[in-house]
Amino acid sequence: MPRRIFCLALFVFLGFAAVGLSSNAYAENLSLFAGAGLMKPLEEIRHNFEKKHGVSIDVHYGSSGEIFGMLGVGQTCDVFIPGAEKYTKDAIKNGWIEAATMKDIVKHVPVIVVPGGNSAQIKGLDDLARPGVRVALGDPKAAAIGKVAKKLLEKAGLMDKVKPNVVVFAPTANQLLIYAALGQADATINWLDVSTWAEGKGKVGIVRIDDKRNMIKTIPTAVHASAKDKPLALALNDYIASPEAIVIWEKWGFEPCEK
View 1 (cartoon, rainbow, N blue to C red):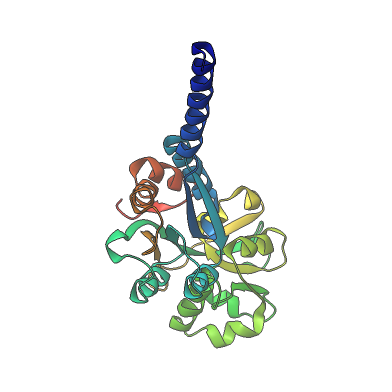
View 2 (cartoon, rainbow, N blue to C red):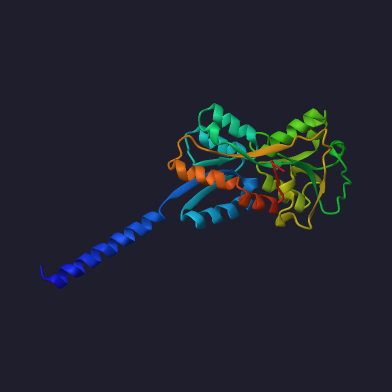
């Protein structure tokens, strides 16, 4: 083969090899199952991690019950972040999540969210039991906030009195915010962080729940036992709980666990 043709062939081969190496460097994919109410901070965190590591992260946002159920039918992810630690602990018991990787990130604080102006004059949990008050709650079988709302109303001895006032059991915290913002309910029990989102800005008000009655939850992150790239999954898990990421969580109304 003439030297010129050989050099050209070698150049073309090396060019294709370089392209192959370059595309492989960015072909890595991670998957994340996350509670729908965590979407705002996690989208920023995901974007930052992708830029830092040259990877792509596929995220499935859903109710905590939904993403837990996905693990139960054999679907896998690399990192799992539900809206309350109960789901992570149950997943650990079932062998789906590695216990040693669980990290507490931020607190989930339940509050009463009302439409702007609070025309029903809601001042506390007892007011949700008043005749004629329209209440929206999360579905206890689907949403972490639904399970928490049910428990704290039962703890206060109010569930049976509030139940006749419930106009909807919503599957996610996001939908509860919309019910309050549109005035389709006089009161909802939702997470404090969700109530600060732009969708509710100027449209909703917050009524704090007495600390003795409230049930503040913790949001953890953890790695799936079958993560396809364990070192990279661990890096993402660490980043989600890192000081850099905590700044983003705080921006979206979450309170860090270690503050």
